[in-house]
Length: 96
Image 1: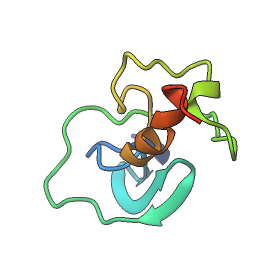
Image 2: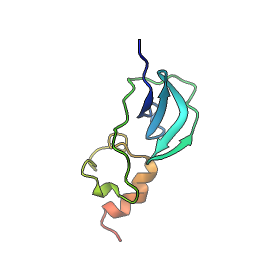
Image 3: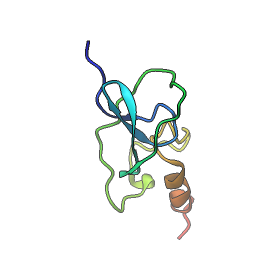
């Protein structure tokens, strides 16, 4: 039996992505392409592991430049962290 390995959407929904090793969440996380460490919670996650999209973030790009961004969806559905949403909110609203 093969176990998932690599970047997956964080099953705990605390970060954008979490590194999965041998089918288990690790402390390595990623938000807006920036990697850091955050140990997984002690409780087990529910639901399937979803591989992270292959598309890498483009430095300096905004989510409004991204054709795949859908503002009618929530942050998790758009694969965004909370901070990216707030940082780009003014740009999406047309503010300078």
